[in-house]
Length: 364
Image (tube, rainbow, N blue to C red; front, side, top):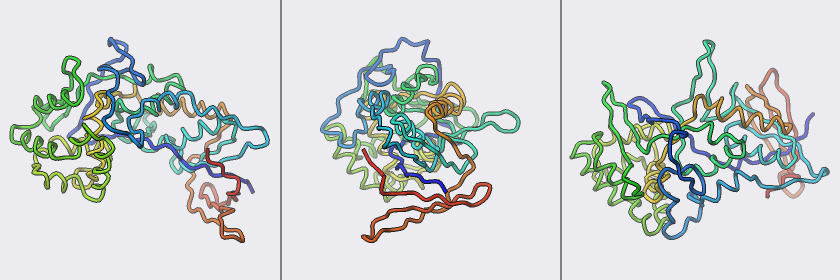
């Protein structure tokens, strides 16, 4: 009977995947570019713009990159080291494990799939092909992730920087584009120019987009970022399509531009994705130039992202149970009604139980 402590998964990362009517990055190698480093990532535009008002949640806090690169710096004394079970070996779980193992704890992962990575996962099929969950791109404001990759020493060699354009591959082979390049001029002007110049939308759709976006919370973000984000969070209960039509948007714009982007963000179309999800991305693009800069892995995410993380973890004593699905977690309580033990049942080559002493959980 093993004893564990459960660590909460504390880092959320957004992974992007794209479907048919593809939104296709036109990638080229970062090593061929004249790049200027910002405080975070190899920005091709300018240092990150200052946010108007406050950014209470730190969505665009560039210092996150440095903190993620350096780690917490916590080292626990020998007598306080714990054996910790983490349910889920996606990026969030593994990065949590990196900090905990670096502190000296013994980490064990339980992952239901036969491979790690979660929504950013990839695997090799029986013919040797690398299969991805989708087309994964990394926006320029992924400060936490970039810091983690720098800690692993893989940022420059694992990510390919693309030109500051977003391409749309249409049925029949036609190509549309949002071209954010504007001679060094950044957000929000370069975004407005990208929409004005794109051939992906006809003039009627461009007018429709102009009206919808001009009356959206994105405009407020230019003077009050946190206020705009609150307005956007209040739209979580409606679909982007419903919001779009309420602002005078047309269906053709959804079909040709916003559906491909929705597939990128959540594998679903605008009829089903929350308005909050889409408008958050628009908000970031409007106030931070490098937010719309895209990178891609040089190849399979498993090779260029997951394997270095797994190696880092195993070097610090972590172990992985793949194909191991946690079926339920039921806690017991003490005399005061406080949780003190958790019983976990696992279905992997038989059924067994783990007792977890909750009284030792420490949150830093």
